[in-house]
Length: 424
Ligand code: HAM
Image: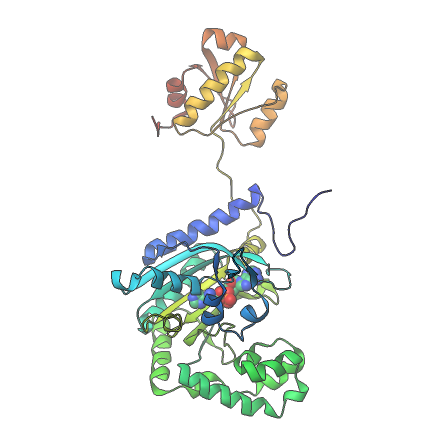
């Protein structure tokens, strides 16, 4: 019997891992340029963090969390997203007293019990940023600019940004009532989920993908048309700054996002390559979250994207797997003495920073050279009994076939290969 990966999870095999490194390195590099520092929080959190932070009536909390009791009967949850955890860590460590303004980024697995499909998994990876401690619209724009820069660095065009403002808590309450008025006499034509949302979370109705509901949603009021003066001014300034930076967006009055902590600015970057799961990343402001978690009133803004989803789009656009780091030297061994010398040399060269491989299966010369080619080794050298006893060998450059006699010492090989020692 063999075991398959759990439904909705996947293995990243070594070839595909190159894509992951490509994205992760790009995120780290953009984070460096925008001065966001890395934070790593646990995968396990107390369930209450998410019920309070994300909201009981959201789909994520209501039906997608991996929640269980630990051996002492405490309810724990595998984190479904990173923002609540980062806000919790900000409070747990009193980061607000160290420096009230914090710009943080993270990479890591998240868990949601969703219906698996293309671009949607039960264990998925997110990259995300959170900027905590300022209400200024320049920060909303910086967060959006970060997302655009990341996409540009990865060479991804053909994306667009949906932008909206859902206002402050009071605006949301008023908007909620407006939506209930709008939908009250349309409900009997809408799906059961929307009928439930009408009571628990009418904003979520705007997100429904069902055809029969879309028709009723089209005529619904838009949140950005019903903002208080301060929120309207904030939204105007966000748009003016985006215009000034030449960052494209389209205001989408239907965009509300699926998590309850959002206030004011919300956005999603979307790609047509993803079909129905078109959201490459999403985010917004959460000016009430930290207070809801028991902290002082502290605004925040951020976004997160699915790394796996981003890789799907990258692969669709640039099918070539990013090149793996090549092997510097392949030591072909013949006989036990040759093997003994090769093992010693390989070890010494690796300590000096070179990538070195030998064949561990005692195979023919031809098979070992085939392997050296498959690994894209830059150089090879055959070490048999003669080479072992004379401590001399012939270094072959694989691409050109050019051969150079060398001493079989680590120093001579490092010199011949032309790489400076990095260790020892
Ligand atoms: P979210 O919209 O729930 O927001 O998720 C953000 C992104 O994570 C999505 O746009 C998508 O790329 C990816 N994602 C979500 N669920 C899945 C899944 N099941 N499989 C694959 N990818 C998925 C948040 O998580 C917020 N914490 C974002 C945020 C940060 N807001 C402010 N700061």
